[in-house]
Length: 366
Image 1 (tube, rainbow, N blue to C red):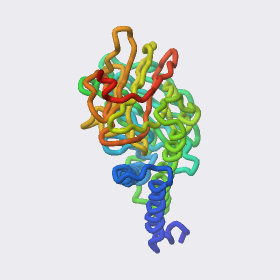
Image 2: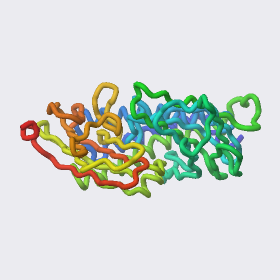
Image 3: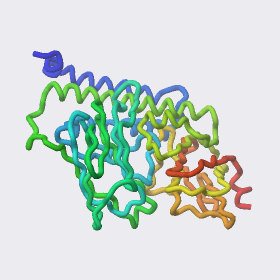
Image 4: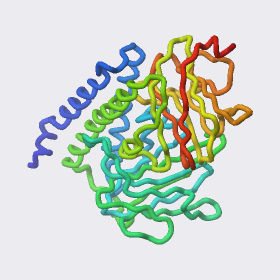
């Protein structure tokens, strides 16, 4: 009997998973983290959300011979400044295999495919790219149908590179307006695989449940470290370390800004740009301390290229505040006194840096 099977039979596999989740709770109690009841409750809810996606990613959909798409960030699972304008999809891969993604393009503003290696289940949290392909560089049928091959060796038509240690496909679909745009419809299959999966392998289950537990703790720690770093400059929105963002799985077409905000009830944070340079897309969002986008189902917490209102001279002014100042481009803090911010340029020819300053709400209205 192997060591993994012995641990499974003795209940150690489950105990170790539970211990990993218990240990992850220490990230919510870090001394620099805000300790309001709201922030503490959101922190533990955040961990519960990470558990849900960890089990989907590393247990239920962990077989690279029979891959399927999951949505790792959405309205109720949020990781690392998830964009409210994105539909994220991921699938488990094995770089030694070949895969086919097929479907319809849809009308979503931007669509891209990236193969990755590593992942947040690893201690270093690195999720380096092994291949990238944007829809603008692909060919489609007249009705939007397409096929995309994933492999280590180049293939004719739409081809996305992998490496031997590639283990994930990440798809980003970015909306200008979710109400009117249609997302791509996608399916993935292994090329040359068997017709049916084998029964559950006890050794693989032991390993996958262990990775699920590690994913929760390492993801929580990674982005708590990021948030801690942002606290050194309050109410600013400086350029992020782009290499760090890319190492955590960022889109190579994106230039990221991350910041920390802290406001009293009678204050507003003004974020200003003198103009909007030519770009495929941009957006700005308000997040909580745990780098989760605030609840965009019910609160106006983000703006983008489509819905922001520019001044007559092309200037952009965004107002982050608890109360509505009666002016354009107001973003809600939704009951929070502090949190993080994220701004993105996508496909921009230049990266103008936003300026930020705190003003009193009454003065702003006047």
